[in-house]
Image: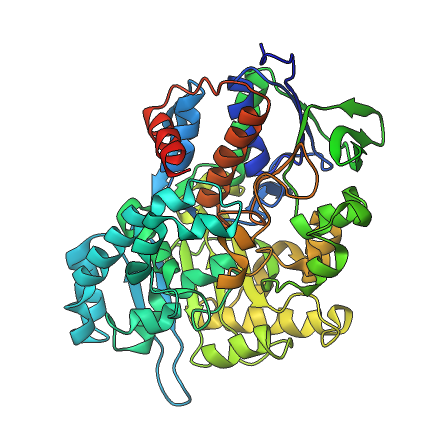
Length: 524
């Protein structure tokens, strides 16, 4: 069942997507896996909030690049498409560009149909439409070349000096921001925003986000934007169901108090109920918050409390979850409103750490146009997200949340939704303080550490945690970073490192995984 030393007991802290993917892969390899989840439901931020017959995704609503999870399911002997019905969306989303004073708003329905997309862009900026296919070619090459980097661990600066990394520099253009890189393709700022707002998936501004991340929008067009029936929470529910079928024990409402160490090695995990011996511990929780709470500061030579505090963190989000009487069938599944004051919005969030109450950018999910299972008959759900600063002394949420709520509801009118407040039957909200207290996010930063060049690759917390032996990290706080596809990739990286250390074979019947391992061994 295990390697030569009889090891194989793995405790996973947190049943988020990274923890559940790790559990599946490790169980497939023969490990004895126990997952500890403090909440009553699995999924963490990728879970479902239910109220009076309405069902809301709490966090992620865009399900992108299912290829990674499809491979994980296949490696474990399951079919993602059979276990989890999904709809590919067309249009993927609607982009609404707010007008300056006296100007009308314009919109663009983003679609993977290249000819239709060209026509949609041409209605706003004819010259930019002619450059669309060049953008696709450039980013297709970038993704193909960079994908192996996202699939291997980075444990020191020497990994950056590998020949294949140096060859990538002209293609990656790390000295450019995302917006500046897109200027070679698109002249109109609105079109550039349409291909760069995805930097918000990382909690960053397109004007500071590294140019590498132009692949985010490309992924949407090349591989699709999907809606899992039941919402993104259905993804983690399916993963938990399969993990348990594979023999994984998932203990819900089981908060972890500490990781027990002997010297500098993890040997057990202590909960409020019991202490579980472990040959390895996987942490699938917000890195900054978890390390400060679970491992004493004196054991963390590299990632001390002071070092954690010195890092830059992503923005947060203000959330409204609205159960609505009636339907909005004229509104697409996903709509992103990009304010004419987009740069000012970003300055408020990232530099000045204050709330934008006049014309904030926002996002709305109207999922019932695709999935009627999410609300009672004749009703619908609206998920409203406003990007905001992480926790700051400049913002008093107790005093200012009512103001931002009013501003958010007013903004919905710009999408043609004029009577929302009168039709609300259920309402829930989350602020940065809620993200911190309910979900354990440092500063309420919903995308963990910022993805700046000095906080990526080997400069991010390592998948094999540097400070305590036998501890492995998965999730947005480690390499490769935030977003469901790369979180699933972090699970594959960490699971492989863990199994190597325990001298266990992966037993993953997936050729790409075997090819990737060979490539990694050659590179090292």
